[in-house]
Image 1 (cartoon, rainbow, N blue to C red):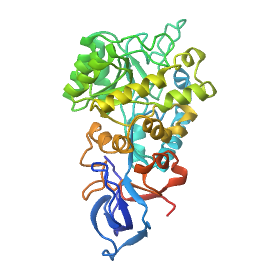
Image 2: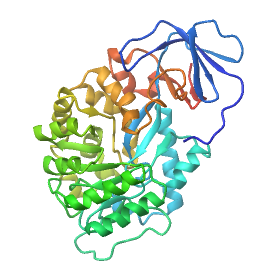
Image 3: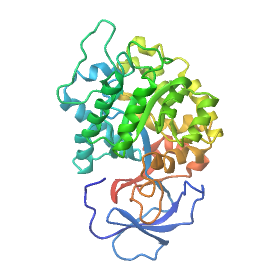
Image 4: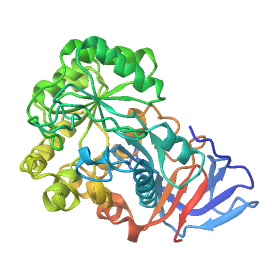
Length: 414
């Protein structure tokens, strides 16, 4: 998962108060010992001797944050324009975006279309600082679907020369299987499929349903056969339900879900990944960052509908993970998602979405998401108790004092 070596003397984080996202409890000050990239031991403060010591002076230590819906290569809100942009330029912007995510405290992110094996390998080998990156390559779309970025006057499907597009067009069960297999061949951690229309696509409606049930099942079968899973972009209940019934593991956005959707989430042990901040950002500054006017018109009520969907899912016991879906320069607003969710969820529920639930969705539970011996030393230390107010996490430049990833201190303002 992370090819870097973290050998050498241990690091001791002294006087740390640990926030447990399972119980919601905060410990008395302790010493967290980190060695070889893992949390080696948690003991009474002051009992460790050898190695490097950092006095956290009572800062609250949390698991590194997990964002389950990012687009690190989305250099513009005009997704069609990305395929015409120099791959080297897009890569440089992606590296900068990922560095900034890590400095905010996000130590793991799941890219929901666009990133590839090369970016994942580069960050794993430490060629630049960034979160652990799980990628899926291009999202699968039907002709005229959410990731088909051709306008109504275009005919030929554009192909990026050396950098993956956000979308791969395929129609029918045979093409869907072939596309899924090709994405898996590229080393993908997951496959994304567009189950409905969306904001950034030029020729569909948000409420439209896309791909037939047999096409969706074909993609899910291929993912399962390879030990991977499918995430589905979906807004209306009809698209959400069809994806869940076919075995899609996580629904992205889900703003227009209904009671039948909630029942299916529970029955299928699936996850919901709302992405609320992107609608606020698109409404306030989307056109500045390249969002076409035809797409801006779709944003109007999606935030309010998304908040209501999140409230219903939370109250209904659905597994909810943290996601943001920001594009272009709007990615700087990633941490604002915490405050938006806090208007309909408890602080502990929001924190769980960005730690233990995210880890479970990514099949990394037992590896990340908690501060326990044997887990990866992905840690952040914050000034204040986020359970008292999520504004602490929403303003990382002020409150995140230390970021540790796989045992390396990458930000230290202690």
